[in-house]
Image (cartoon, rainbow, N blue to C red; front, side, top):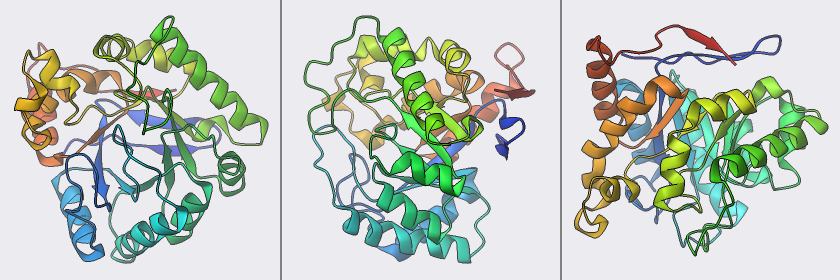
Length: 295
């Protein structure tokens, strides 16, 4: 099994190894873009989470709200009802993985932390006024993602001056805002938000700048490209002709290319991703960055 080791050390920061670790996506929702409804039942979600860890996931990202393009917001109470039983039971069963909650709401994150979650994966980068105070109070890890607009509207004509500069600037401002209320910089990671208010050209530019994003934000970088329409488009295939679940082979080609240049890959097909990373690492011509990086 390939592992990326994340250690939260307030004196040294989040320490990660290369290549990237694997964050398995566990959607406890009825409407996520590629697996909506598959794990909406808590029993099914817990079994799926255990299988993802057995396949090589070192993180589980549990979500109760779809943030696909066009998705409507889900109230906190509904999110909590969906995700808390899953997180609690995974912890009770001793699952050997970090658990993050995929939410924009501090109320949901707080309930998830009480159930045993280690981190919040926030696509809004802490825009809920309660999110950063919660992280400061609990010391939990926060993954701050860039998104232009809201999920319901984010893909309507996204526009940037320089997408790499704009995303880095936004993430740095959100890190600064977190620090101002007492969040330890060491407990933060960033995500450029591939597909969240970006065109194909914007996404390509960001994927080519991952090392720069890590360097200029000073934080580990999390990347999610799994099953996104960007993949068939870049491969010269009509996305409509390749349903989301059929995009795993393309996803893993990109995962293998990105693994040396980021800290964590957020994926649906964990077993396939782990195999792709092992294959890439076995070839001397493409093996990169096996040592630890402190950022």
